[in-house]
Length: 294
Image 1 (cartoon, rainbow, N blue to C red):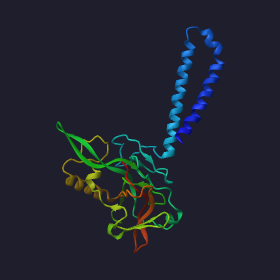
Image 2 (image 1 turned 90 degrees about the vertical axis):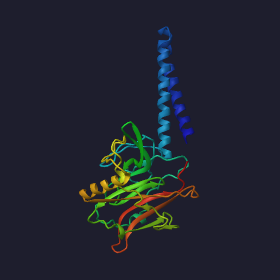
Image 3 (image 1 turned 90 degrees about the horizontal axis):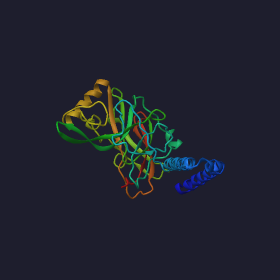
Image 4 (image 1 turned 180 degrees about the horizontal axis):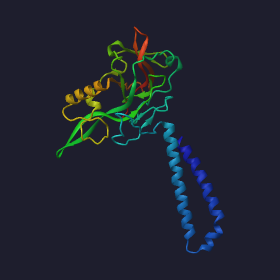
């Protein structure tokens, strides 16, 4: 596709250059020491650069490599400014996270038959973001220390109240709930492939609660811009974050997805964190299983 775009852009550029040259031929000849000819050459180069940028942008959109940066409470700028794959779901607020070559990508739009089957529980879902697990640094005296945490955070807004769309391998979904209404152990994950041929459960589906407060409340002095922060050990930061959440009357959990290298083209799944007693779901999500890339 990119070759075709380049060819079209090149043809348009050539046509524009020829027209400009023809119109200004007599003027250039009368101008003397090539002044206006030099200007036309510069103008042609500028048009060529603009055309290349358009081609690259269109190609990036077509192949899912467009990035965005968002901010919200607890969500800051990208730690490394990397480009990322735009989610292909229907949610315009969907986040994106950097992907390696060979990555299967992210889930497509949610099938209506699954979205209509989910009834969202009224438990105050909010302040959600998608991130990646990575390392960051901070200064202690003259020493540079390294820790791991949730980086490249992108805010995400659920559709239909609790459905988070367009996730993939390497994504970590962070979600908060009203602590008084959220009963973590009442829910079980259910996942069905878009075509209905596969099902996943707690063993093979998304991993729930793998990340603790230390991954969210990074060490004070880091350069990511995420807040709040705390000093001390990993365990003390986790405890500090739990206290911070309790003071706000909130609880949180995370969802992440394991790679399957043999699923080369990727398989899209619709999942809901379901309470059998009430028939309601804390959240639902879509993700694409596949290789993580390299």
